[in-house]
Image (tube, rainbow, N blue to C red; front, side):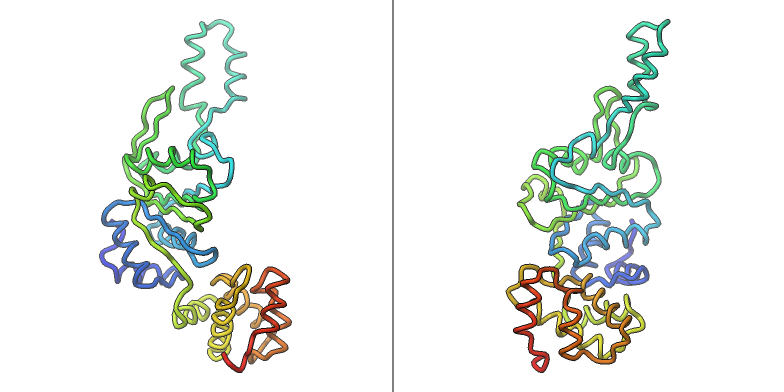
Length: 286
């Protein structure tokens, strides 16, 4: 087990620079204690991926990352064979029978493990991050089910590889598509939304230590006001931090209307959002 208690989760994650809410700390503790994968959903930029990195740092574990995308297949997620090396081996096997050559080229020497297989091999601690699971095709979930159910992978030519030490598994999703019930059933679920105002101020002060406390407070209030607008993309926590770093680089002492309008492009990524915010944002109200 990685953590002794929920408080231990909060304290040790904080040491890595990750400030966890009580809900996050509790779910991470339960995932560790029950040996269950953790499915983390929420908008982009709220710290889903960073949570997996922080757990890996706490556990002094190798972070194995599978970045999902449309079109990812078994060879990219699970394993593939080194075809170039196999061809060289075949060309050098003139004095061997085909059965002898085939046995050789489908051995460990020619296997290229990808993240899912790498995560369950070996005895060293690992954190398996399956990032943006919702971007992968539905068929890829079938690959995940065997790994997340029994922590094993079947390689037809070699047999079944079973984990001797289970990795801590984190799946992230931006909810761009609905994940299957079979996948959800195997996981503990955690939704990470935008943090409460006090927590976001603490995050800003931690990540941008040189920023003035009053400026950080004003910044967070403005960001929260922007999130209440009907924007194409509301600012994430990562963009709040970027804005704080921007203001620090500009030696800003206060957040006035001119400065906000000049730097809105740091937190808003679409021109229509910038125009809407510039017209509607009332700094006196925040």
